[in-house]
Image: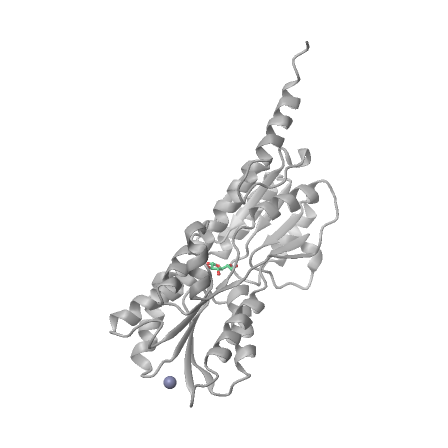
Length: 324
Ligand code: GZL
Ligand code: ZN
């Protein structure tokens, strides 16, 4: 009997892999096999970011997409340089998570002129020319901020007198920072006692959160609430709060966004009070979109990922098998 061709064996093997278990098993079509994807990643600033990178790498392997992922250490210039290298290398598709919203039109026009489709993931870009990218895959950050504010309005309904809130923002100019701030502010408008008395950039890192929170604690005597734009900054703030002998989660109520393992553990232990999920596991959906873009299939202009919220009980329930 003639030996099945190598190609046939590879495809069959690939299909079997795709049927494996686990979150990141992207449904694999032969069309994705061998597609070259250039991905520019923001950096390695938080647990969320590391989980996001792992999800993309894992899903590329499952989909046999040839991935060239470059980490930009939080610098837009590095991302623009990486995208230019992908254009020079004539990759099939470019995808990236833009560290900040603005300043992308020129390099995205170069990709368009080179006939290379671009997928924006996670953070969004602020441009008038939406022909510069095929789709945006990621969270609704405004909704995340709104969920944080709604919990606060509910939780402080019976609070008499002013509630003093401080905010540790994400990276200045980034879509999550801009939109979480807006969503939060809109939601707390419902209660005039809720006042943001100070707000500063903690850059989504633990060190940034600790530094900003210790500054707030020196300047403000009665802080009731902290809204941190991600778990890592919130966990850094917890350290600063404990360093001055106050009880995080008790003396100062804390709300964060991401729902990483460490964030949910702190919530389960009562050092945080409420955590809004921001889903980093974008890999499988990204590879599906890459396959469709490459084969010219139509795709939606916006793909919003599902995400939920956690209180203490919910955190305890999911922790045992939390993936990241
Ligand atoms: C949100 C993402 C943010 C996370 C942070 O989708 O861009 O950047 O909330 C990460 O943890 O650093
Ligand atoms: Zn008070």
